[in-house]
Image 1 (tube, one colour):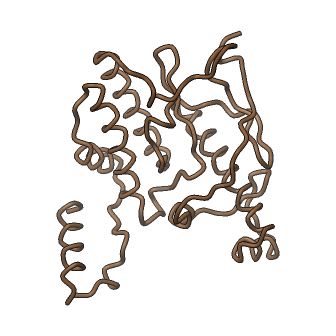
Image 2 (tube, one colour):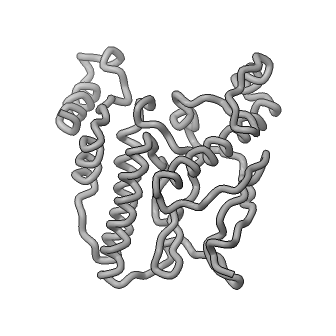
Length: 235
């Protein structure tokens, strides 16, 4: 049986990202069916981070991942196909064979020619994500699977929309940098900041500072340096 014919439930650990509000900015809370939560009691529990609210938030993370993978799969990205989801798991394509699951790219040593090909493929996937208003937001060689010369991107619960998240460019640049750092170790040189800027501008995305200018102190040297650097990076 081929890897494309297999599927497996992947249990989801409760999201405990540091500063997880950065990733939730602008996103709606979803129930276990992927529908928008409108019930006042449920929304109140989420805002107050009660045990029930945390369970609801966990389910929402899963459903956001499901919707993201479905959207990216339809657009031609190298992501698992989703078959079903529950409160704590996603049934998706299993990458590997009967004996083992595909390893993360992080643990793979590539020949330079193959590394260049896969680097271009990862960039292609990043371009697809941008075209679908999505940024992985935790992309690295640790969550790119490698199997029989091909890659599969996984782990999308924290994915963000660059149109509505004020930290989007900073997070996007971090994703690109991490990818470039891995491939640099495989002999593929690149300029991550330049690549990130080029892709961002090619998709006509806005450059939004992660701190509103009105909150900066004109008398503070550190704030002045921040604003000057932001203007240089995002003219």
